[in-house]
Amino acid sequence: MEATKIKEEISNLTVRKKETLMGLLGSYKILKRQTGGSNFIVPSFNVWLSQIYGIDQIKTNTFKGWFNEGYKVKKGEKGYMFFTRPIKGKVKDKKDEEYRFFKTCFVFTEKQVEKNLKEKKS
Image 1 (cartoon, helix red, strand yellow):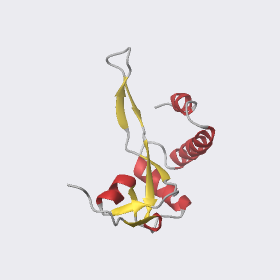
Image 2 (tube, helix red, strand yellow; image 1 turned 90 degrees about the vertical axis):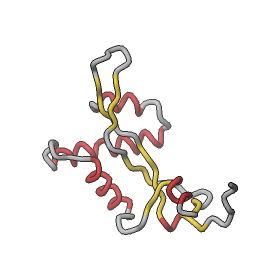
Image 3 (cartoon, helix red, strand yellow; image 1 turned 135 degrees about the vertical axis):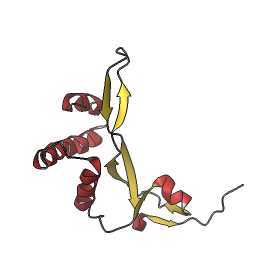
Image 4 (cartoon, rainbow, N blue to C red; image 1 turned 135 degrees about the horizontal axis):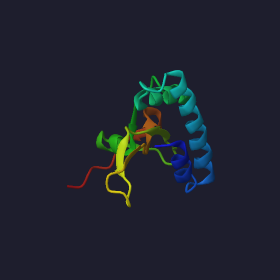
């Protein structure tokens, strides 16, 4: 997906999320340029993000992932934003034209969760 299309999608987000994503987009361009672009993949960007967040040596999981392991995210905790693998999409008006984009997901560290004492109802 081109940077202009990403900027258009970002314009629909809140101001705080816009600032975060615009900063990440700039970092993405720098990292892509430094790695030569052709071999650049999302996992390396996410590893780089985890180092910036300072959580590269800490176990992380999604909200649902922690829930499935018997934990719950503590009230008020904020997740760390990462990107998914590229997802293919199709342009509505043009049947043959496809594009790729990245969704965002949020992960929580083991320090942000606690054992879920409530039993699952069957």
